[in-house]
Image 1: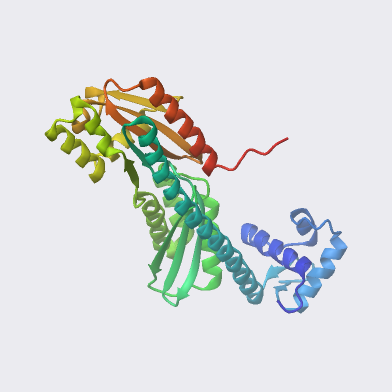
Image 2: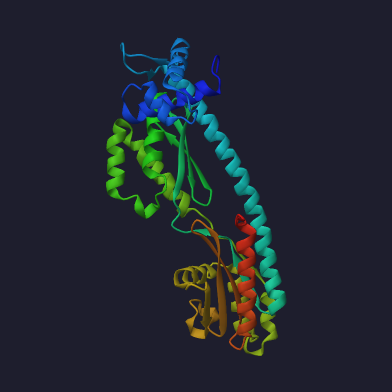
Length: 346
């Protein structure tokens, strides 16, 4: 950082980003278009001369633009990693805070629903459907190890350590970071097709295996996501004679406590939802065998960016459907409001 003020750092960043993109020496006129400094070409030329004297850039031949030196690349990579590390740290704090808050809210929501309706209830953690890649950061851990940090839409963070057969220098690491982010940002798993993968591996050359390992980490960030289901009011079932038969009641309570079968109901509810987000299963329409004597009403709440969860009420077929639907719609609106940022006024 010796001799580098904010203006020089911005100009150096612009030179390196432009050179990495084009492979051509970068002139002052090009930089004047890329920076937000509103400086004249003459001023930028003076700053570039200073950067050259400090050893961050060099001029390959007379009358040419500048290209980064090894020292320039080193500064850029360290600067980039610090910035990304802060982004990831801030994001992790946000995810942890929101997750803890969400778990508490969903447990309370299930309990409140059970109390107001006198039926059994459930609420699920949000599921990241068709999640997109937000960004990827590869960092050097040791001579033969990389840390891949994959951040998906909904701020799902996946860390994976990659083992290397040969050490990777900083310039190659930087090129791989740029290749991965420029190609994958904004794509969902289904959109990362064989053509995309093959082009990336070709561009990565000797490091095509690293691209494959990063893509595996992206896939794992979706597949390993665990669905939490919170239930309440299971004993309310005994209030209804048609469900209080000891065998039926015990099977139903086991389903609510064991929760594995409820995941089938959640998947079915999310895949069949209409524009209202409310789904009603009466008797045999339920995908769960132990709920064939019940009615189940579910609602989908949304956190945005393809992030959805389910709340549901399980009761007798003679349940008060109007009250149940009103309760679910109200809760759905509350959950949407709690976890989404309020709309900007004006």
